[in-house]
Length: 329
Image 1 (cartoon, one colour):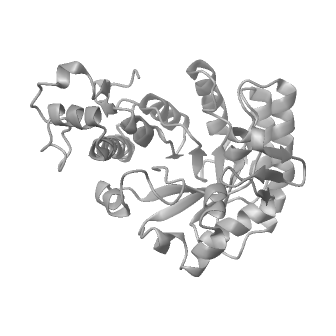
Image 2 (cartoon, one colour):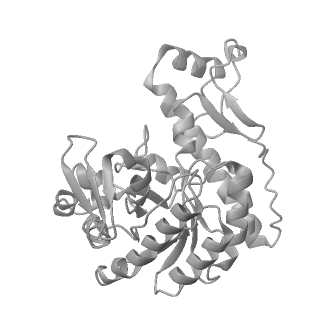
Image 3 (tube, helix red, strand yellow):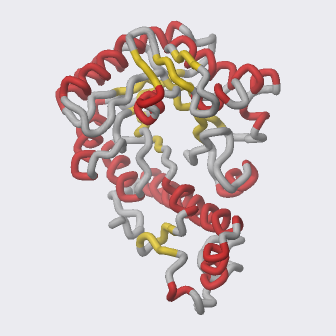
């Protein structure tokens, strides 16, 4: 899933995403509820119509903001009180309100409100966040509208015993899919991957398994090997705005001096192969917005191709975790 936090994947339109073959986009409950407001979006026909998107939509519940905006919120078993990063006004987010907002947005998949612990944190802090996630889980389900799909989220930090307890608690409830949360929140790769390796196979095989926030190509391949189906990450778009291109040979800095006189296409993907490496570098050096757009389109095309190659390998029975990409970065 490309990340469209505010109903927009940065620098590209819905028609670009459709052309690239994407079927699902992630947006954010917290941000859209503040601006323009979920009630307004509902009156305008829902988020699909609002952003003119023909595919499916999944919304994060705001649980990530519980961690990322920790200096602007207070939390207890009832819910979370935020101070808006826009104007300082108070916003109260409970499991019931998070599900209501997502219903108003009219998305295809709503995420349960959870507490995402930061890294590093103590075992006791990770356990407390996990227990609160479990406390909120039934309230999320009780608040859903008829036909509203809600995914539950497994927490537990980097601790295998907590992850096992969380899997048992969350999968005992009738969620429509299951996510591994609290990964890619600052922990090094050597701590992240074992969590995925241990947790993913414990989730029901017949249900969708979603790894939240993980998007390095190598981490995606590793997680697919562990049994994960669904991913989101800001990396393809954020790194593009910082001159970084994902390629078969690893990551490339489009502002590198060696590109200044390089007339070869900067991308192999149709529609982008008309632009040279020298031209893209020039755009970045001049601060032209077109640079970020072209780089974003390339990275999104690369990720779409990566996922297609993985799907094709699985469908053909030849999936061995090697899809022909350089995955060291």
